[in-house]
Structures are given as structure tokens and as C-alpha cells.
Length: 500
Image 1 (cartoon, rainbow, N blue to C red):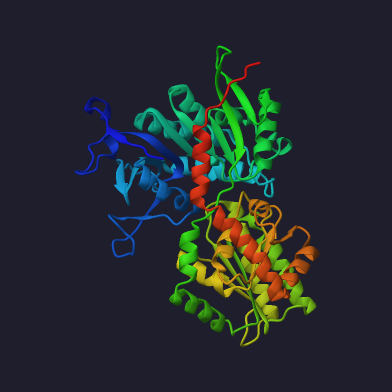
Image 2 (cartoon, rainbow, N blue to C red):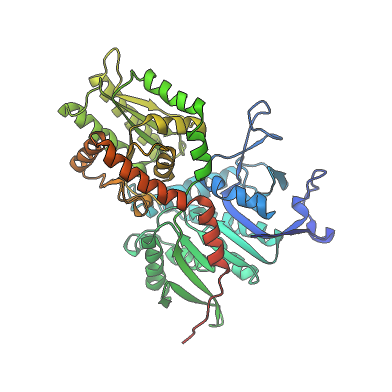
């Protein structure tokens, strides 16, 4: 996809003067990505990869879209990560970036509040109880308006706008009302709940209405797209035909057709594969094994410290396997990487205390002077270290209670270039739809989870190789570039109107 951007006439530019050589603020773009965060983080000048005080973020969305952004000459709209700080548009790593300013109150109410204490638990099957506060909702609407305004200011006529994720579900309709000339796509990276759960949200109609402002609403799984359309029918009385809604304006005339469709996200296969073949990373994987006392089996969990990830269920199952004598600390070790997450939100503070208490109990009961049952790491790691961990691990444990996709599962499989290792995968992760040769289980069934872990530990090399080869082919054929290309191609498709 090729896009251009052109200079805005001076009379329209407004705002603060931009630094010399930085024309992002004075440009109009015909392709824009909109997400809660910009694809960069602040860094110290001495840090590797730091350029002008910024470094590209490591997240999956950035990995997915940054290469395309550098090819298309488009712009990315998002918050730069520091509250109560105003920054003018700037360029970094070949991308033009348009910062949206958030105050401390915005972060507390819109982000930590409505996005992550209302929508996140609601959309993940109320694993934790969602909270409903009108002040949070008011902030969510206000901040969504600010994102929409930033797009309107910088979008060229007929531009393609791709809005990302649950923090910005009102933006599509706001854009539709302000700029009907735009082509609007939205992608929801997390699950979308069934109407019976979504019904709890006091502002359910406004959310559905906001999303229906898009021409195309993408989801990780077909079931999510189906849940969304069922909610549109139930709460808005929308007429749904073949996953399409004829959206009507205030005058009762059809303004556009909104479609809902599954586009399972993937990973940068090339990057993971190349790292997995590097001699220094292979050596690091061997060093990890030696540091753990060279056990026969290394099991690995890699998650954000989040109650949706099933970390407690995994630890419970592993502790019972130790108690049953099915595994011993001499023969097996579990590495649990739990990267810090939303540490100002109470539910996450409580989860951290519980997980760390459980790890302490397991290690206090089963450790020896030479061996540790669970090596718990509450850090984030660079991708090179993650790939070394994937290579070191014989069994990958993905026990999510609900997950839009779970890219860790796909990264592990991609890193296993020798077609060995085993993936234990929750049926409630979107990845289970594609990785059908994984050992799929229900993490709520602790006995079933224990049996599945032992199947993985005891799996014969020939079966492991057959399963891994099949999963690797699926991922190699469906990488992240194909994901974005498929979505944008579908967004460009002409939809034939049938108003009958």
C-alpha cells in the first residue's frame, strides 16, 4: 500500500512551531494508525537503540505495524506516555508521530479506570469484577474525542484510518460524523464478550454505536465477530446480514455498511527465526539450562502479570505434580516470567502478592540446595533473551483463562527451528484456533492441566516433531505482514449495497 503526505497550508497548521526539519505537524496524511500509545518509549541517550531520547516500543502492535508505517509514509496518533506534558508532532525511525496529550486525571480515569478496570475484565469474561463509574465513562468519551480530533486535523481527504483496540471504541463514529470522506477500520486486539456479559455495561449502546462508525471491525476470532454482531442486533436493533450492518444516519438514510470479520494477528516470523539461529543466542539458551542445574525438563511460562493469564492455575497444577511425585526438582524446573503490568491498579497489586506468595511456598517446600522448583522473574526482557528462553524450554505453558490471541505461543513455536519442544495451550486463547497441533486444554480443569503437562513432558520426539512442524508451517505461512495486508485489503474492498 503506497500513501503520500502533503504539507498543510500555513493557515491551517496552527499549534506550536515544530523543530527545524520536522514537518509532521504541518502535514496531511492519507494513511494513519491510531492507538492508545505511540510506538516509542522514552530512553536515556546512552541506551542502545536510543535516538533523540526515544526508542521503538517492543510490543506486538508496534512490531505488527511499524514496518508498514515506514513503507507507507503515514502517521501514527497516540499518547507519548508522560501525563501533563505537551509535545508537538515529531518523526522517529522513519515514522511521523502525532502525540495526544493526557493529564494525570485522564490516565487515572480513562486508562486505569474505564479501559482497564471496566472494559478489560468485562471483555475477559468477568474473571475479575468490572467496575462501573460515570466519571470514568465521561473521561473515556472526552479522551476518545481528543484522539478523533487529532486524526481529523491531520487526515487528507479520503484518507484510510486504522484505529486500534478497546481504549478507542468511540473514535470510529466520531470520525464518521466529522469526516464522512474517510475510510475507517477498527481492530479489537482483545476478546469481545457474548451479549449476555456485554449487557452489564451501562454504556453498551454507545460502545456498539461507536464501533459501527467503522467500515470494517476486525477481531481475533470468528466467535468475537459473532458476539459483536449479536450485541449490535440485541442492543441497537441493528439489522445484521452476513456479518454486515447497514448503518443509518440521523435522517434514517444508510450512511455506510459496517462489516465484522476475524483477522487473527501474528508475529514477526523473520525476526524470531533469525534470532533463534544465532550462535550467541543458542549458547545463551544452553547457559540458562546449566544455570538451572541442567534439568531433564525445563517448563516455561511467559506472561504479563495479569489475572487473565492463568498463572495461578499453572502454579497450582505444578505444585500438585511435585506433591504427587510426577515431577521432581532434580529432574524439572519451571521458569515463570511475569512482566510488570498496571501496577497502580488494585487487582494487579493483589495478584502480584498472591503469585509471589505461591512461588515462595512452592520453593520453600520443594527446593534443595542445588535445585529450585520455580524460577520466578518479575521483569521484562529484550526479545533476544526471550528467544533464548524459548530455546531453553522443552515445554511452553500458555494457560490463559481468556486471551484475544497470545503471541507468546506463536513466538515459542517459531523459535523451535529444530521442530522439537511441546506447547501446552489453553482453549480460551485465540491461538488455539490456528495451532491445532498444540496440546490444548481447559486451565480451569486442574487435573486435566496436570495430565496435559505430563503428556508434554513425556512426549516422544517423533510426535513432538510432527506437531511442531505442523504448527510452524501455519505461523510461517501467516505472519504479521499478512495480517495487516489482509485487513487493509478487506477495508479497501467495495461493498455492494443491498438495502432490500
